[in-house]
Image 1 (cartoon, helix red, strand yellow):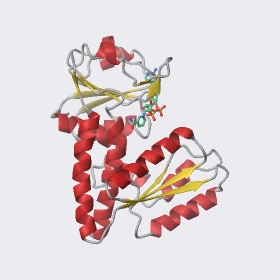
Image 2: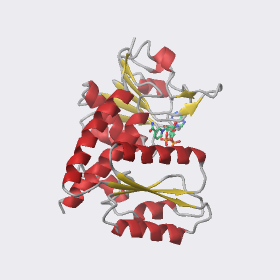
Image 3: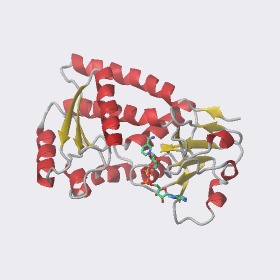
Length: 283
Ligand code: NAD
């Protein structure tokens, strides 16, 4: 049976390192600061935002939450972002997605200064990632790379099959794997005969959003299986995109849900904010 990759433990270790870095920066008069903008009343979004605030506090960072009503105008939101772009106490700006439909998401993302885009969603930063330059890497994909690194799994020369091609998970995680010299295959909703690809993979990353979608017969014996999904099954229980029960019988390594990829996402957000603070003090 598969070895379980303990994301909670690895995240805790990373957070200790981040806390030390925060302390060092504070000694030099810089307190890393994150601004989170929450628009409207999405319940899941509120939980995510609260967790991000809490993590900042735990690490001794400065954080502010800006709440805006559902019917806020695009102009007002962009104005707020511009203000934060100028604010020397803020090193990271994050607009919690999704935002209401009357606001142009693309415009909002592009209005955040690439120097404060700690989510790594700005096209400039995506381009920098693609060309292997210094940038803010998107948090969930970055967290996956750290999980592998900390587990001692090298991706160079491996065949990685990414299932899912979203801008926030699938596409960037494949790119980061490629940057680390993996051979990458992307599969998605239009892929024919998905199994024929996943069966060949040394590493499978599942970012589909369908509960227990990946089964034992998708996986090669001994493969590494990374489960990004956060879903609810029919019983309302939290579960991933991978059928953990049966896949853990064939895989070599597997991330559980919860306590796998999830805890890494916020950790890398904290990492990026601290990195931004450090870089701003060197400019
Ligand atoms: P998305 O809905 O934007 O993308 C899903 C992708 O799955 C699409 O690209 C689609 O082509 C692909 N897909 C759909 N049906 C498929 C099928 N039958 N066969 C193959 N591919 C198929 O989702 P997302 O934002 O990438 O998120 C994916 C999952 O990861 C969700 O459960 C989400 O909640 C979770 N998530 C977790 C974290 C975390 O921190 N752990 C972060 C982001 C997203």
